Image (cartoon, rainbow, N blue to C red; front, side, top):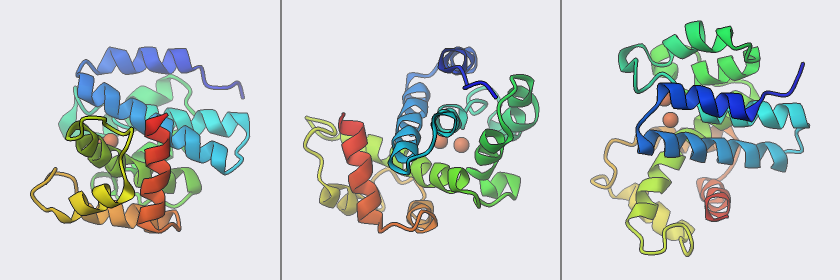
Length: 181
Ligand SMILES: [Fe+2]
Ligand SMILES: [Fe+2]
């Protein structure tokens, strides 16, 4: 199968999402997924799949919030020939909506990167230098502050780290290094 065309994926994303913060979130999760795929020595095809899963996981969120991610998984993505692994990973990033829990590696990593990326973005916005001098400790402290980014489910963040077999702090440290670059 041909490598997924990033340009086409970005075009698709821009057709469905206008909001800057959701576009930024999509790019952050794509970046994290690509970095993890490379750190796990995935081949080029898989790296592209991991990137696409991150980039497109919230594709239908803005236009079809009540039908997220069903609309993307069942209607939009199959039309564009995305591999089943990408579609299944997107389905599994929202198990409470789809009933599909993350099992395969790409599914588990997407789940682990999604909410933590959102949370870390919120932390970065509070800091004069963003990710530049962010410490694991400052992220961990904010996680304990229930009033900070209260809409981000802490349980999902903890569960994500468990799903990829990492200490949460190790996962946060990896993500800081990615978002800093
Ligand atoms: Fe989502
Ligand atoms: Fe997301």
